[in-house]
Image (cartoon, rainbow, N blue to C red; front, top):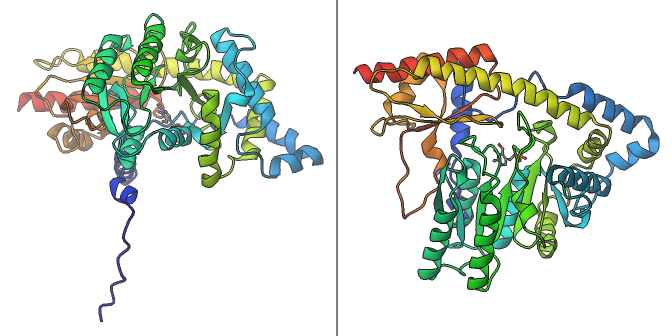
Length: 432
Ligand SMILES: Cc1ncc(COP(=O)(O)O)c(C=O)c1O
């Protein structure tokens, strides 16, 4: 008899879920200690809010009653004072006093969990998800696991292009895919997008909501805009445009997702969504089976920091620190990639967030199996191949010449050195 254990037969979803590229990139960074990683979307270590969290935790734990409440299970929907504070925060950002209501807010274990839950509630295998092209690659992995049919919509400097979205939805209707397996989702990262760093312009926002409303009415089924605003607070100067949600007056078409991971502390892994009221119940049913509530302790800490001003003060500090690193990256790109003979590299100039998106000359392969990726590793710099950020859309081919760089983790000096190494790798391929 063989000593091999019997094989497990994985579920269909188990089979459809493939390894995320991020695991490979993280392993590569750990294997090479001298590598400068401009790949990870992690936040800056030095600015994490140690003192604000220590103070809030001490306040919670010093009183037996608040300590017991924080250390006990909470509710599936989330700590209600926090949901109130979240509404105040969102109403302040959108200048909509009193409009958003705590009963429409669900607190989740990171906004990633809510992306997953909404997809679970709305999309069966074959269901339609339309997303910007390129898009956030961890969500792409979720869509593959659910067997969604994905369509990518072009972007320009002002974010996703409304006419292109309109055309994509019309095509899906003509082909009989809408309504199809599930209501359909339009997924948009509306501020400082991961991976391009671009923000959807203010003028386009009401148009996007109108387009989705119109196509929903035609399909006789509501399509949901999932507005992923993970990087909203990381707007370095001035004010960011109002959310897509603010143009959805009755709160029917947009789920607005935000997180404490990027503007505060990813270790608390707490995100939230303001949902159409009639979706809240279905999402909570799914969440009950998953964890019946996110960490109550973390939620109570976040409630205190939102209310005592520490969150806002921290965001200001973060924006100042990240602006310096963004500027270091853009200056280094000018210096080291601006004049590579024959190369013609271009890049975005983000007003916030953590990412810069590079486009190399059309023939240059920036993929994981391409020469540039290997050469960059030899030079000691790691980037995210842009190919990961294009979801599998059977109607179009992903370009292979794009790169995502992050200025989140590395310090300004490492950023300059990393970009210099990348420039050397690109120039060396140009010479061959
Ligand atoms: C666009 C976007 N959405 C959502 C998330 C999920 O973050 P979290 O689950 O920590 O809130 C991330 C994390 O990198 C992201 O980049």
